[in-house]
Length: 506
Ligand code: UN1
Image (tube, rainbow, N blue to C red):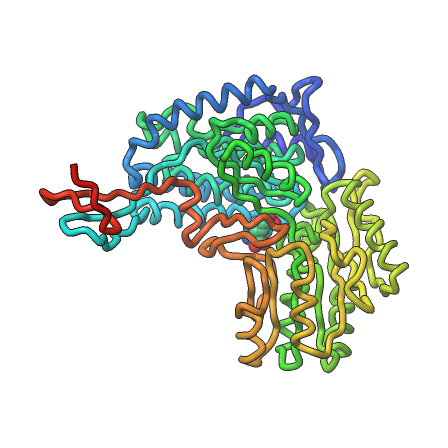
């Protein structure tokens, strides 16, 4: 039995991260842990006026931060990574308390922050522009990357801190202050991360302006203030496609920049030559990990008829035996759903697929916590075809399995959904693999071979196409979204030749 209350563990963990804010504000916003369904804190909320003040302060900070050399800006991120390393366990525990992840996954999320910080530190000396051949003699052409402005970061409950860091670590080295609006479901982790960041700021010294990184606690009104403010140059938003349909047009209407990382409906294809043991393990983590609440979760599995009767029974066995339980007290691999709403959505999807001829294995609510917590056995559903809820992202551990015979046909089916985030093929056949990765293969932002759809490393650009929103965050050249590009042409000759041979003699 747990001797301390979850609220007490929360308070202790927050204090260990250096948070001094009151966690028991009367009449404040209740923060509920999905682990037990109980409120672990009540927080003061920011108002729209507070959000406007944060935007003004961040713009003030931008004026000086953009003039600090990028490698020096990188030093702040380097110190932040050091502080994150010291607080990895505590921050990981906050992720477990607020999002219900296992300790390994909670700490894994913090590791993802450390990794992107390390990446950003190197990047701070590599914000390269091109030198471009010019058609005019005695001229030189180049491009220069400048800081963009204030970056508003809106994050979702399922990854309470890593996506903020993919954005903020890059934004900070690129010269941009950040304002973070975390999910109302996971504001404590944001406050804890901010406290850790402030330790890095204190070590960094005086040239960091006030308001370089701010957190706004509150609901949609606060987020909308960021989205609608012309003084927020870039909005990077992670969440549902429904949210993206609201945010995208609003930012576009003011010609702001947007990075959208929205829903996925990620699939795997299991080919005749697949290494089935490896496939089984990859699918199990991809579909059941984080209780199916990753945007990269594997939601559909197409299995070739020749291996269906080998892999599907093995998967059913793995699903039946997976441990579900309290992530803080047991070594369970699968923790709770975030709330009743998520549970209801799962129940509704399963009811609907049953009507459509789906054969459901698992999916029952588990009696492993109080009534206020929602633990479920992950569900594997054998479907006769891709139909109904299979076309949608239900943010819960449901894996729809379908049989295929023709490779070209399965590629069509694979791509025939709204989401375009992540995808996997399991094969040892070179032709299938290369076709899947080719222009007529997977249409997703992430296409993997012999690994699952989730668990991307920070070094690659992260994001996807179609209803996933088209944004890219994290590694590769995603940093460019946080800077503005200037093309510079310099005439060092004594003549003034015009481009395209135009004559204009006066
Ligand atoms: C998310 O679910 O919003 O690839 C992000 C992954 C993690 C990130 C998931 N690195 O599963």
